[in-house]
Length: 475
Image (cartoon, rainbow, N blue to C red; front, top):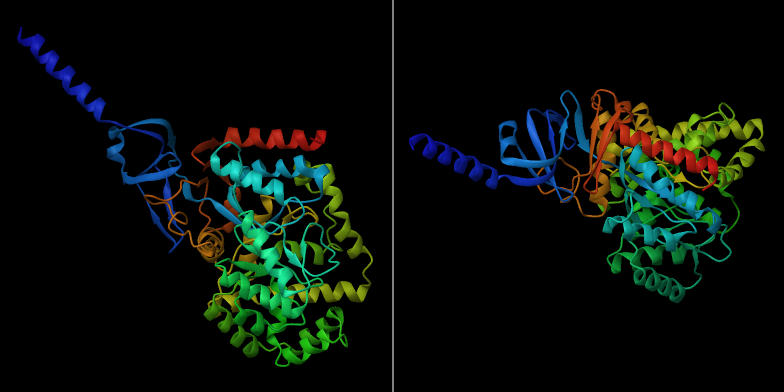
């Protein structure tokens, strides 16, 4: 009888323990947790994930408290938040909808769990993809999109909103808010300088972030003080380093000087102290910069590498590859002098990166990847971008911060992202080596967790195979 009672008590105890176990989706054990905020490493902890969120960072001994669907043994691996690419494009017209859609899992396979779409001509589809991904019905990175960008009349860009008056600009803003864009994009092809500045102020008044190219007819001081949220492409920061920027802008505005002819003058008259004073002003006003070094380097040095043998082309659809021809043909037509100039412009522009960092300007990691931008590949491009950031003066930690800290901070959602800690979204990379020692380690992906889904290396390879097959078939 005593033995039966003892067995009954033991059974009741085990049942009680099992009943108390917390059911969760994923637990990661054994990893080195990288704190991207300060570069420290945390070891011997459990990362507990449920419903797409981190619900606990706890001691390994607490594993017995959980009933887990997927247990990830990450001994010797490094984990960090998923990467953000803060400048991508989906475009090329209705015939390329599926090819653009196929890029979404390509980002996931390369560890990019969030992208900022800086607009093209497929906005209605990108908005649908954004919502489907947020609802969990489509695989892809979380998308923040501008919708159609603002431009002037007869712009070269397809699919933008052309405005020539204040009323038209405000109506365009109304339309963007109606479709619930995440920010506003403005470019500099034909838009009037006054409308450009008014659009920045209007976006700020409506509580909307606004990023853009900067017209050479305006100074960096003018657009910064107007409230531009981010400057897209590092080259625009170059002209801030000349003391007579206002006079140069006026000459461009009245047509006595072209942008092309202005560049040699900018290179010859660049002054570090002048530039730093403007960069400190940008930092004060919160104007960020997305350098997009990778696309600038690729197009500047097409004479050295035409990229036609790139292995990564197998993941890019044939139609998207054809959109690369525009930039390639322009580069082929350049004279020897023009080629030397574009090399000089790139190298000088890239040298500004540590100056911006030193001045306190927020640097955003973005690629310009997608359609039109030759050989600037979705997924791989961000890894190359961060390698170039380090090559031209940032530390590996600063390059990582430009992606996983500054990205969500731009949208004021850093409370949800940017760290492996309780209550953050569980967008996580599992890496084979430490990117703080070598930034190229972001390519060494062992697994990706995104939107509550776990993809081990085998699953990621299957994704890549599927993307490659679709690209070859033209689907």
